[in-house]
Image (cartoon, rainbow, N blue to C red; front, side, top):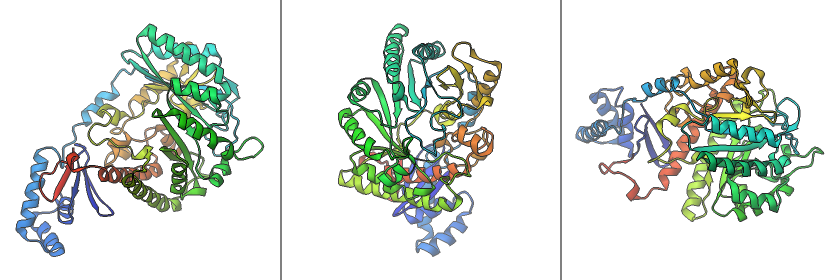
Length: 469
């Protein structure tokens, strides 16, 4: 399977199953596009007439294509279907947990999928005892995994800050005892950031996610306190101080765009101009009936925005003032292993969410839905929970019918199970709106990545075709 597309002056050919990416001229682009569906004579009639080349020119290009095919770099066969079947039989071990240390929040964002931190239930804070038991549960069920991940989440986790610090200290103790390595992450809206938070996070947190929607008027439309006051003026100086102190350690400015700011690239650029360099912007997850929900009419606008973002990133990278965008971060030579590319995030198998009371769910987006309650950290998975976990284990990029002919399936791993469930009521389906956005992001990400490669990074089989394995 191949995917051919144009991005400005680039003719890009992605070979799906080898991962090779080829930059080609107009003639080669058309020949490759027709290669599997047309005869040599039909290709010659089309290409010679369109580009003014000879049959011998076409023959030379076809020979190059067949050479790349023999090398497994173009029209490569799908070798991963059997691996996908094997994954459905795999015995999974827990690798990561999302600790909901606070089911409460000091902001009142109307688009919040977590219902302002309550997750459609009662407010509450995780006790130190429950948090410790959750860490023990992770270690006990981690099997061969040495590197484990714990994300402090909410609501707003800084509303339970002392417990967060104590749990990190407990985790550091337990990882030494059990020969594990725990990486901690914190997601925060920034309201309660102070020097203690900055210093502790920069010492202990592998990554920090900082929530900002962009321009003041955009951020303050939804990200308001309980009195309706916008949070921008409060959090931006705190975020800038935090990031400056963090140095080279990982962080993300994470925004959400909605129907009200489909020009979201302006928000990304605003964050970059504020001095933030590690950026992410996600489409809103909300009810279709919500005024903030993205519409079908928004789709072409959003796709154009992703292209605009790619062009701006290419420009700024060339000027030495670049930034990263989460969805455009592709390693063309050493990305995620094929098992991860097939199976995805591991929700319900390798990754679980833990509520303040110790209940277990497949991920944070299922919390509060009793149909997806797996059990608890005290007693483990219930029979229902085991059945649900098995169902999640059987869902991947090869088992979802909607992924069968999709060229991007090894980049999205079949997409988000929660989004599929909330959109269509079934984790085995796809979220079509999200799929279309994802495919556009991958096209743009490849264009950005290819623009940054030097000649030394590119394998050149001949004068007309460039390839990145």
